[in-house]
Amino acid sequence: MQTAAGKLMKVFLTRRIPPEGMKILSAAGVCEVSLWDSDEPVQRADLLKGVQGAHGLLCLLSDKIDAEVLDAAGPNLKVISTLSVGYDHLALDEIKKRGIRVGYTPDVLTDATAELTVALLLATARRLPEGVEEVKNGGWSSWKPLWLCGYGLSGSTVGVIGLGRIGMAIARRLMPFGVKRLLYSGRTAKAHAAEVNGEFVPLDTLVSESDFIVVSCSLTPETQGMCDKAFFSKMKNTAVFVNSSRGTVVNQEDLYEALSSGQIAAAGLDVTTPEPLPTNHPLLTLKNCVVLPHIGSATYSTRGIMGALSAQNLLGGLQGTDMPSELTF
Ligand code: NDP
Ligand code: DGY
Image (cartoon, rainbow, N blue to C red; front, side, top):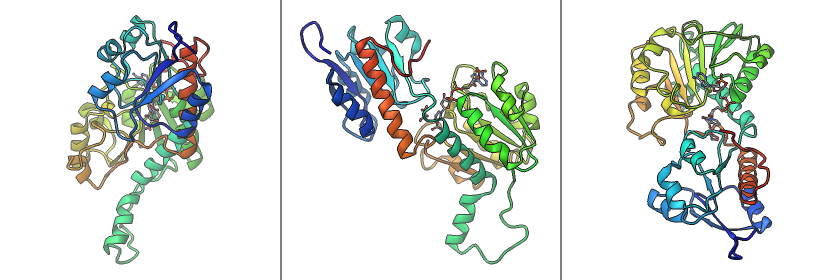
């Protein structure tokens, strides 16, 4: 597709993306692609430079797209396509003001993220990283009745904060482990909760009655800092906390205190603040805290599909046609 001056539209990609996405962009022949040709994040100054005059921007969750970036892009910008389902890094009010469309990647990463969250929950509750470490460091002296005991899902109460696409996929996967009650909280009760006998309860009830708490909500002004001192103080001492949503939903100082004082049993985090978490962060000194580097959607096939979908969204926005996954806001 060409501009009025007969030139191809310009798009800026803030990172190397999976080849499935690049192939779609090249084959379409409607845009001239420039990219931050690296697996590491683009520096702010390079982002501001790269986006100048772009008609389309393909970004990642680590890129803060705010008024400064939109102003740097200028009036050509028609579409922002993010290679993520989360869009808390996008200043939607500023984007809306400028009439820019937004594409994102819901659904295609739900299974991979739910699977990883269940793996993290089990690894945390059954102390897998500690066990692996003991095998390697010679701490495994014998089978011992009270050694490396953890918590099981059978007969338990699980609380899911945010029973959306991913929360529901997590609940579906956990029920066959023999979960007795599935509680969930959020802004509204969900019809789909019936499939897992989900009980819609106030957050306080979920926190105090759950043996496992899984956070799978989106990051919003309401959920930011939601898991704080008051939250952890209501949890059972034997309960396990898991977060695969966004790091800032949790107050990490309060989590550290809750874990180190025995207020709660353990925590598994796929997301932190900041990312990466500095290697000298206090949470990393705790045996009862398992931290992963934000790998919820990291399967080869899922990332390939996300790449393709984000490219298709970008093209739809450039050409003024339907996007396979357009965010309505
Ligand atoms: P959905 O929009 O389907 O679900 C989000 C859920 O958050 C909804 O059920 C919503 O409930 C809930 N929510 C919103 N506000 C609140 C609140 N105040 N209290 C409790 N719950 C609330 O999104 P997805 O399930 O597809 O994705 C969820 C999030 O997971 C993404 O936004 C992203 O941050 C994160 N994510 C992390 C990944 C990882 O790699 N770790 C991978 C993919 C996503 P309601 O409808 O009632 O408002
Ligand atoms: C998202 O899509 O929001 C995740 O955090 C990464 O897949």
